[in-house]
Image 1 (tube, rainbow, N blue to C red):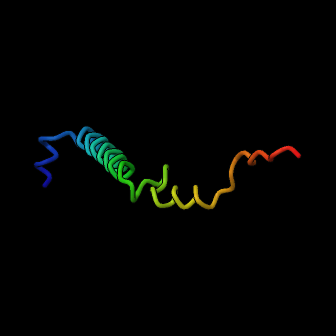
Image 2 (cartoon, helix red, strand yellow):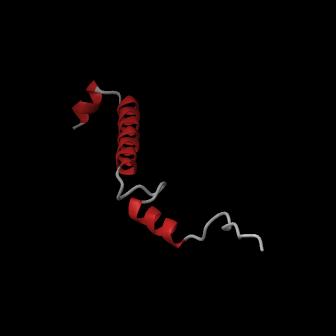
Length: 66
């Protein structure tokens, strides 16, 4: 194993490994965010539909003058 580190610089190898793992984590998070089921930012379509049904109207309905 020690011969491996004679070929590759340990600092450069660890920096490359860190950059690769960080970019892999960002890529996986964006993939998960693009799905409807696991998007924690926008929420699922079912949750949005349920909120739209139970939420009171933003503007009160106009009443007829007497």
